[in-house]
Length: 264
Image (cartoon, rainbow, N blue to C red; front, top):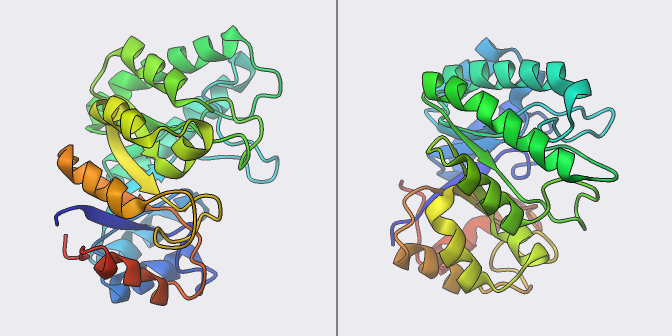
């Protein structure tokens, strides 16, 4: 079986409290690739050296967020946040290029009372980044995040996310398909995945509802889902964005149980 997996260092290897230390833990566990949400707390040169020394591929990073004020991005927030959005995009591009990371997840932000204007802001901002990402040879992805995990996150529907990607119609603006969020917002996974996959550049997985390993008790039959991705010829990485139920390395036994390896 040929699916490629990358460790999400924002979720996994919490045995190490510092993100930088998790690169080596991922390498020791056998991973060849990683992703993380927020590398910006560390100087660029430092995180690049750690990643290169561990001989890992960086697959994905998110755009910066405001942790203190619990603001998950700015892309759908409008003119008052334009400067923060543009600054965040510039920083994300710098980090992505230095890390040799080809995918950046653009965060839409928390909106208490969304209107059609927020949709328009998001589309306008994605159109703004398109030539920047083309010049940097990067792909932007957007992700629908379920309202139970993150209340009031603007982009909480994969139907809406797909409409926006189709409207912009650019190979640089694609979907991040998180099966955990898809199940919690829509379900009907087989039909939904078949519909969304042609517009998808990255996938993430976790069990529902506990957000643990794919083989833990929950709503999703991940052995079937992963076989479906293979049948549909998905060629990208599958990000393991889950909270390990126990020790991270011990929990990786699901990979061999399902017939996969970390050799890719």
